[in-house]
Length: 134
Image (cartoon, rainbow, N blue to C red):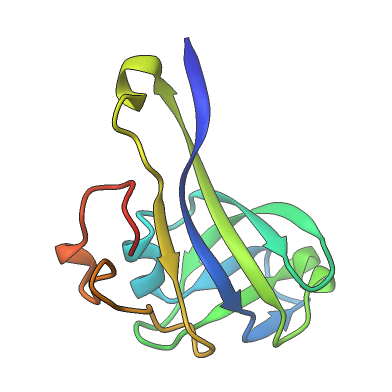
């Protein structure tokens, strides 16, 4: 049996812009995509902490190091710059794959920089396998 699980998330990112007149998607800093193991054009769910809106879209890469979290197209109506959002990716797993499974959790500061600490390496390449805190 396959189970759909939270593969990864970027927690409490700050929306930097909303562009109603751009094709639909969410533009993210590629450093966030890499840290959360989310690929460009991958489907994600976005949860707006400020107003409770939940919606799905796909990712696009912005400028590296920009801290970009930009909602484009119709989704731009569901956020305001400065809103806090959670960006979640999901994947299907067999029960055998879930024995030691943990989603990859990426925490960011107000500027959408990855928060580091003993269990949160700054270099995504040095990050532990999916399922640990980043």
